[in-house]
Image 1 (cartoon, rainbow, N blue to C red):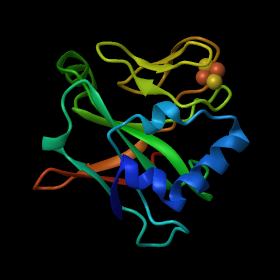
Image 2: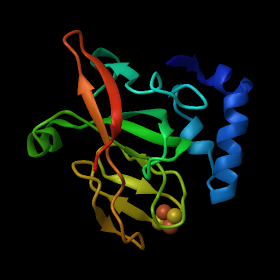
Image 3: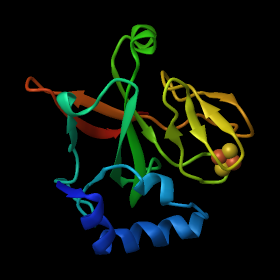
Length: 167
Ligand code: FES
């Protein structure tokens, strides 16, 4: 597990790998990289790659997101897959029965990067796709599939880990 600042991330070879993968999908990374920091799993994947520590609960405000990179794609193949951890605003947390949810950040329509709109839903800027922050389901727009969900665990000190993709 590596925690790096946005500047370090941009300098590193990690960006090149992600950018190449994203370019092959036609994904603009500007919004993903506009986050203050990006957490990434080890490149190349191994049994040490997951669980991946994303953040501590104290570091994530309600109605905000943290971007991170899953070391596996949702289909189980190795890859660096953009994802977002969301701390739900109180009314959504009540509906979800939890404050934290995590999803793929890759829109299932044509692969653009989605993000949480404050006081709103998860939004894809390419064709105005909207997803429910509570369960990742499509609310509006052209996407036909929900956002794949990341299984997360919060330990006794409040550290939040990505465990894998929810089946
Ligand atoms: S790529 Fe997301 S709505 Fe089209």
